[in-house]
Image (cartoon, rainbow, N blue to C red):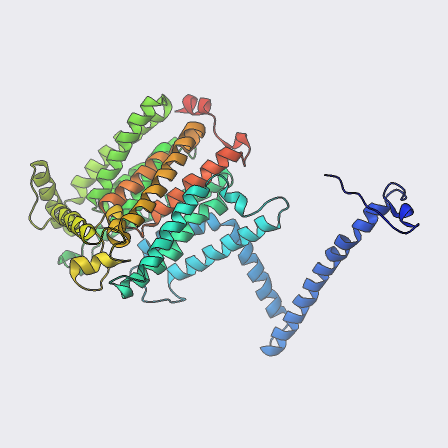
Length: 499
């Protein structure tokens, strides 16, 4: 498109770019930017000096104290932005390391601190993207608008169900957690993961935190508190097992250090022991099922290197888990619990439920959920309404199946939105598996694991399902628009050679 200028005065001819002296127009057009490039830094310097003078006089301190405080604040913001991936991982794990749940909002609560730091890092990243020429926040969601729309509509449905819920107190808490934590972990990958190395920072943090969880659970089994020995405290840690199992799957299918395969196998061994120490059968069996399904799919896709590496890792993990099971079962803290779980498992193999066992409770939950759906099929009972239907009181309770939970509380409309979101995410995952190569092979098993876990023991507040869905969509955008150098990916030939 061309732009023509017309002048009415005789002098206009001299002002036309074609008749002007060389460099005249460029100098005139650059006067504004040159002025702003001087004015903005000058204004910031003056504002900083004024702030230092005000703080020094307000708190009767030496001028260097506010100067150091401002430098520390700037340095902290730089560190937060550089380590935002680590903070997102910490947000996924922080609740598992806490010994007491927070009551209300407390600035001293570790979850609140990590949440604020994570929000600060994402905000700074958004400002950085916004300041770069030719880039925009909306560009981060290119090609993934349908999945984002499904998520927002589902969240809106939860908000709407708050207006007719039968559990207003617990429903408000659930809505707040979904709107804050669920939304943050879903959108964080879109903002952070623009290159494969950005994703690696998060994955390395997850490995370290999962190893710490495994060690913590083992130490507590060897040094149990009195309430554990007396049977008043359950040693089952479902949340720990889910995170450890996901990290175990990632290590099997993603090679972080090709120069240190022994270190990777040692981490797999420790995570397998930590998974057993968590005493959560659903997570352990889900990991085995997902690995078996993925092995079949990789074989059909002709990925022999990945299949061999997965087989070696699975054999190692299974042997170590079996030895750990026999070993941990002798400990006083776990003896009674693991014996009870073994009895229940043997009853399931025979085709019956152990009275009062977990399997019998799950079946009761599912049957009651179907009854609840039949009573209010369209809009459901409202957010957190399952607890009122099952317990008869405004208390937090879940059917241990996030699809049934959505159908009971948001009706078939909300369940349809959730299924639409999962189908759209699965379509994006299929494209990633087709075009991403072995570098992103771990996304298939970790997504299957997060879905399966939430079908047998999870709920809508699970951060795993939302985070890995957002990660898959971010990687699909990354591959579709090639927002990275192709050399950042390990070639399939390199995988075949070193597997």
